[in-house]
Every structure is written in structure tokens, then in C-alpha cells.
Length: 90
Image 1 (spheres, one colour):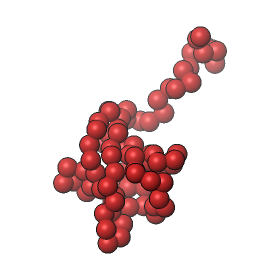
Image 2 (cartoon, helix red, strand yellow):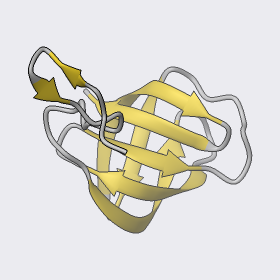
Image 3 (tube, helix red, strand yellow):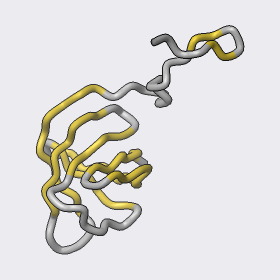
Image 4 (cartoon, one colour):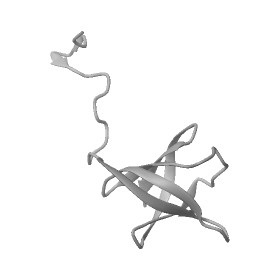
């Protein structure tokens, strides 16, 4: 089924809203905000952010450091859904 036209354009319900599209990856990473890093899986990545999965839906602060492949990036949580987190790099 095609999406309904809006203003003369066809918009997909899953249209990408990011300024930089993320590429799918499968990498291990760590969330750092306390004394013990928390392991995570990085599922998608761009220059501006990432989507990660954690083993359990634990509490995380709104801002933390994400470490991937020896690189550490400050980030903030943009969205949460169960064990998945959408991040924006700062």
C-alpha cells in the first residue's frame, strides 16, 4: 500500500528523519558513567549518533560516554524502548 500524498509529495511512514543516515553495524561497546563500564551492542552508527542494545533495561543517566573500538564519545539519550537506546553524540 502506498502512503497517502501530502502536499504533492509521497512520504513513507518510515521516512528517515536524521540529517545523517546511520549504517547498520554489529559491534561491542561500553557505556561509561560510573565505576564499572556496562557492556552494550551497537546496532547502527553515524557521525551524529548510534542505536545500542543493553542486556537489561537498567537505568542510565541522560548523558554518558559510549566507548566503541577504543574511541570514546560523549552522548545523550534521544529515545528509549525496552532494551534499546537511541543516542546523539555531543
